[in-house]
Length: 172
Image (cartoon, rainbow, N blue to C red):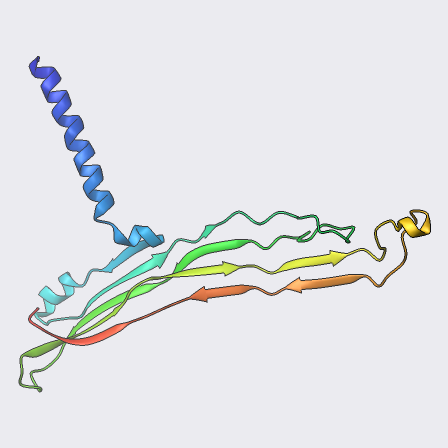
């Protein structure tokens, strides 16, 4: 094998390994969030004071495919004329680690708060309508009969399971 071929093959394998490692090292991307660190290192060094470490996660909403109209027996207008739009995203996450004075005496000198981003599923409102006529009635020579019109609004849906952890930690 020529040296240029070996070099090219090595470069391709390195890129594939780096891409696989990056895909495995981003758990925030699994729920569609972007990590946002708050850099306080410069202030910490200039003031010679230990400041809290702060970070967050911003969700990326992704719209889904709406459920299309369906024909229902006994109705002239299909069900879900104005469909409900599903949107999946996440609630923002936050992480905070702040210094504490040594008042407890057991070496716990930091308090940590971890509120990870959590999945959020929504379903927008929809409209259901029905015409003021029945389907053709064979007992009445195929002529539809009048009835009261029907209209309804499907309520929106919101599902989430947020959580947080608060605890004391040792060290930096």
